[in-house]
Length: 281
Image: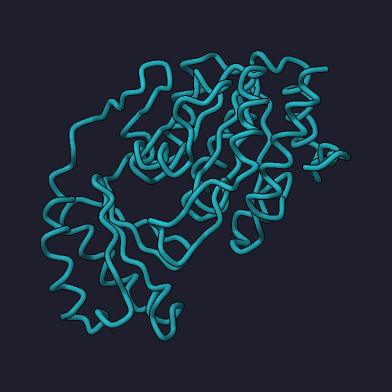
């Protein structure tokens, strides 16, 4: 961020400006909730190679002591997000919370342990059926399966025509998910089969209520973050100011609803650092 740090960007909407003002007025009552992939870590062809942007941990370390809580809300297993983010044992992040699998898992920096709800039996059934299923629909070439523990994802990014493969698989995978009591969550060239009733909006709302947040910031980048955007909008209608941040412009459904659009994880990290500076004044 250099010797001349960037100023805190101004939200484009009045609701967003109100949310930011509320966060800065009482940072000790504010929740900062963040997606991981695409928001704190750049999207890469192999999700196992994703790592938090180098500026993220320093920014969070500066911000976390000044707000009520920083929470990472991700579809990844909580422990994986902690490892790929480099969040464990970092000064300033002693009270970080990671809500993994859309809130079905929780890692607390205080204890360094993960707690989890019972696994949905449909995930194991889909996991066993999926390789043969993809072959039967002629989609094996160029697609690959990511094992996510409490969910299973099919990626099309490596296919000859990623978008065409993505569109062709949406219907069949939705049917497969429904047959096993799961739901299909589309993302950026990825289709995730996961249990119903668990999403980032539910996780965000429950955690905001748990800590008594008086203002909320949520930053995300993909379709799976729409539920969290809706949760912040509901909180705003209930009198809790909020700020919606979109990382990048690849998903217009999200960018169009955001109060503030930032240029990817580097921009998110820079803004978190600016927020920490403003909150300390």
